[in-house]
Length: 326
Image (cartoon, one colour):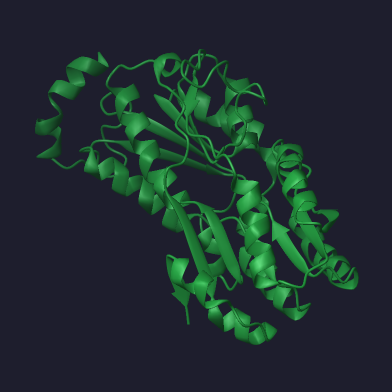
């Protein structure tokens, strides 16, 4: 059925709920979701995506089907999972993080792909241009001028006497090199010694935090990464165990016990991804949909963790925070 013809009759479909698994293929649009983490780790983000769809008239199981595939933090599973979604002939694939986008892009040149939580999409070859992406990929980038400088500034605020900073990143993430380059000038300007540490899978998380603790780093910056995101509760707990003041890049880390977090709203990006899905289902070509940069940032401070670390958070920082967890 022609998608435009179907959408004109959407109101009729809304008034007649479909039984699960009945009348899906060929009658209502299918959205593939290629998740690099676990379903549990991203449950609130999926709900934000569903909220965005509902705001645009789509109700999962009624007039849209969402096929989920989860890599459980194992990036090497993504190509096979992407191939499964292509075999289902989904109308659009939503892919958070560069590894998921790359896997989807390698699996299909025709099915539209909506990316989010991606750094430097041009530099990594995912799109040709931010204003006119070309190809079958569009969506959102994490790129935000000054983010690295902001993270270093916050690290200095929570550890004013710091002389060294440890940076934790995942070398399996294509954005890892960019993340480090973004921080280097800000760290030099702050006259801090830089120590870079890497963990590429959950098995290495505990050992690398032990190594960072032994290095006597004064403060730690953890860059955004889907594997770290899935391990955020363990990362936050290990940082406390090893007495490490830590700045994370997503508010979810502070919700899980991390000391401080600052960065683009991930839930906001998932909600906004629904806008791209809606426009594509209505006939827009991903090649013509500009890549959006983040506009909403969140600063969260966990005072319970500060107390556990014996730290006093400056009042000026607390006043700027979007949320203070007590």
